[in-house]
Each structure stands twice: as structure tokens, then as C-alpha cells.
Length: 140
Length: 86
Image 1: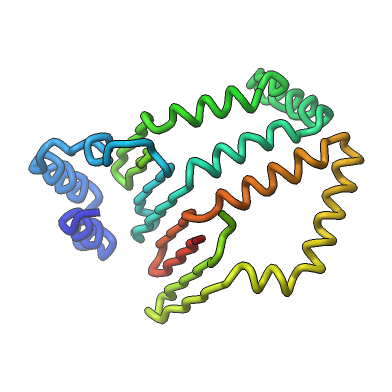
Image 2 (image 1 turned 90 degrees about the horizontal axis):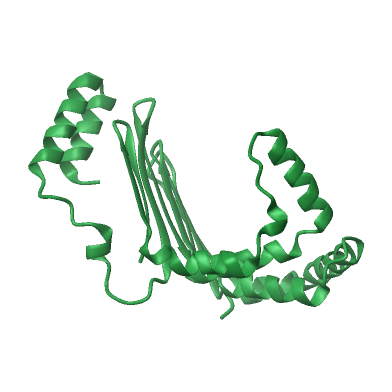
């Protein structure tokens, strides 16, 4: 979080400004900034090693931050767990998913497919902006 | 590569910080009887649920060896927690 943005959030937390004023100030700050260099441009060239999740949020006037770095190798190892799920458990999970209105057949999930998905994650960038925080998921 | 060191840092609202370094190998050696029990429990569970024990152990080893470089950093309400695995 840059310093100006933090100042605005601090003022909001201390009730020095209203939420509407804070939103206007944050929007003005965003306008003043040069177009944000995307994470892809900032990322050094080469194969991505980590999945990063950065989240900043404001809750009850208090700011919070979550910064997570997970090696992609760990995700690749994790997808192998799919092969270890007992068929009985998959059937029960399928039934619950159907009940919840998400008719996904988990028995069709293959570790190889999930690994291919992880392989292509390094091109993925998810950015979400909201008045009370933002979320960014990317690989580096 | 197996994890060597786990670092836990907790910063409290009164700005006092607690930092703990946990060397994984000595702790694993001390807890080795429990590790053996856990592996035996996992073996029984694999037999009960018809899962290949070799595959399960291999997956477990891959997950543990992929843990280094994992980092979780949470900062909320003037409390900060950092967990780093090296």
C-alpha cells in the first residue's frame, strides 16, 4: 500500500473523513498515478516459482493485510492428493455438490489435468479492487 | 529439499514482538516416536480406504519437500503474524 493511500485509510479509521470522502480521495489518487505497471511487466522473465496472494482490506475502520507466497511446487505436489481420495468419498462429495447446485463430477478430476492447470498458472493475474480493499493473485 | 527452519514472528498490539525459530530436523528427531505412530496410523487408514500406501507416502514426501520458501504474512488490527518455512 502506498503512503498516501494509507494516510487516507488512517483518516477514515480515525473518523476524520467520511467514507464518501475517502472514496473520492482514493479515486483521485488512482487517477494521479501513472497507469499501473502490471504484475506481468514487473515480474522478472523466466519460469514462475511462486503463487502470490496479496490482499489489503479495511474492516470496522481497521486495515488488514494478507501476504501469501506459496511455491508452485507445493501446488503440484498438492494436486497429487486427488489420486488419494477414496472413491467413496468422491461419490459423497459429488452428491453434496449436486445438492448444492454445483453438478461437478469429481471422479473426472485427474492429477495430470490439474498439473497442466498449475503449469499455466504463471500467466494468470487476478486483480480485484473494491472501496474497502483490494486483492491481487499472481505468479512470480 | 526438506524444510530446515520454520520462523514464526508475532507482533502484538503493544508493539512487542515474539520471534521463534524452529529447527525442523532436531524437532522431528525429538518427535520421531510420534512420527512413527502417525505413519502407522496413515498405513492403517490407507488399508481401510484401499489407497496405495506407497503412493500416499510418496505424495506426503513431495508435499513436505515442496514446503521450503512458503511464507504467510498476516497483518490485522495492529497484530502481525509471519510464518516462513525455509
